[in-house]
Amino acid sequence: MESAEIRRRWLSFFEERGHTVVPSASLIADDPTLLLVPAGMVPFKPYFLGEVKPPFSRATSVQKCVRTPDIEEVGKTTRHGTFFEMCGNFSFGDYFKERAIELAWDLVTKPREDGGWGLEESRLYPSVYVDDPEAVELWKKVAGVSDDRIVRLGKKENYWSMGVPGPGGPCSEILYDRGPSYGPEFDPATLGPDMPVELEDRLLEIWNLVFMQDELSAVRSKSDFDVAGSLPKKNIDTGMG
Image 1 (spheres, rainbow, N blue to C red):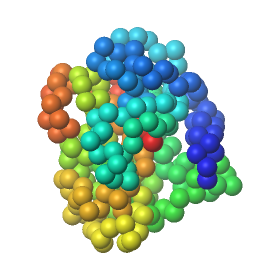
Image 2: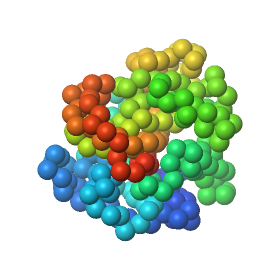
Image 3: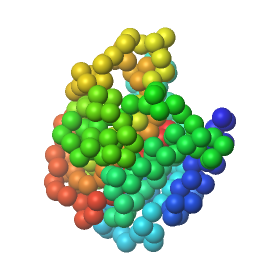
Image 4: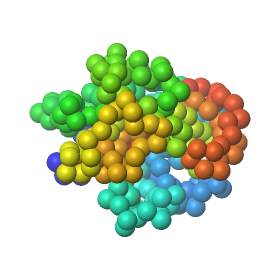
């Protein structure tokens, strides 16, 4: 499937499910903490923080991004890039974890002839933040994934922030197993709290579902930050590069 078709199916899928399609914003960030837009959620940051009332409760976009936090890894791995487009779906105080998981699983596993991407369920492994048992139960309930296929990871892998003060929250990734030619065999139950480097090419993160519920006052690293309190509403921010 070509990238243009992936984008088309993405926007069509979410528009049919009540999301307003929002065009990509400029790469120049309208945010004093950023120079360039690194993620699809950046144009919606005021909505998450409760600073501006959103004109819609659900949105979807394909946002042009320049990724600088991982720039030292570009060229060293097959997983990092600078410029790319990020598909995202967003909920501003509307649906939360359960519906986000339901939508994601539906799109990636739905047969291609029905508008989905037709990925094999046997190759998909959800990851969750180790201190989020609710997400574990929802993956089992919504997607029918067995407990031993759910990867529990720590803050570095499964807590998302902008890298600067602002909104953040625990997240849940969909990992795609590319097969034994890309890494060693593994046991999902024993992988945490950090993803082993030798498995990062095999268990490829294809989609990150962020349960945007916290406001961070300081971010020193991916695993070292201060949570100032809760956001005014519980939101959803997802990103698929």
